[in-house]
Image (cartoon, rainbow, N blue to C red; front, top):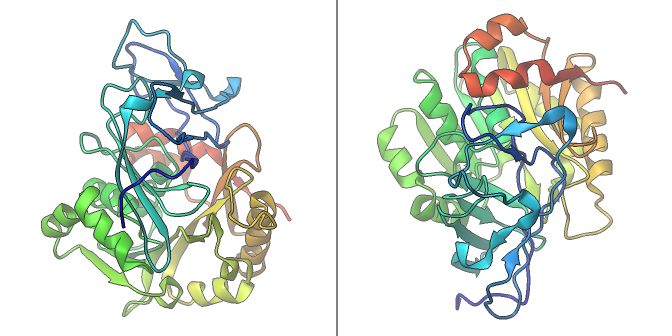
Length: 341
């Protein structure tokens, strides 16, 4: 396929974590999960690309700016010349685009590569070659291994390997099995997102499969399952069915848990009838029918319905959990709240 820019498309950013990780050059970055849209005009120009954002006063974040003299805010956007389209094509399952943000860009995504898979342009993977953390909900996924029993972790909706990379680098004992439906996504991950290097670095700890993630299983069961399954800009419909969660529960070892990106109102679907907030609520209702009162939700953004991550099982000892996490991730622990029907 020729790598031509479409008339326009949008990027909906992932979720920045609301914690300070630098004491120098303090400035506020976005902590909302609301869509930030990156729109490409028909022809190249020097018009800035705008990431619209709202920063809640209760979740101010400090970020080390590459340019201490800059007064630029998130609403000023990224200059068009700081974003490069690396590849664009349609696979059997997805509309794949890979973008690269210049290291010189005055934005938290500076130096990253972004994977877009659907028409609205929701980001499905993010890769920073020079740092481990992503400042997104994927960092919440990285808090998962310390509260699990021994055993392998399954990632359903592997994408380009962003979650796997964090977990493998932070927890030397963990083995990851990942499932991705689209082989083209795995190919893009290997070429543009460091997945090939990751597979070579951890040949005995990382196993990637192409196929239906909801049919995933390993002998002896998973200690934990990360679920990040979206299609056409929406959580897959199977996740609104309690039977799916009952099946996944049976794939767990004793004491095992599930952590899920359940999306929210800021997830933009190709089908306008798939309202992100409603789909999130229906997914949580389906989970609650299986896990009952052992279901917790971590909300990110201005409003509870903006975007959320769900966790099953009894809430662990929070102090013990914090002690085994890197400092950048500790703040997430206190954000979990019981799900109420």
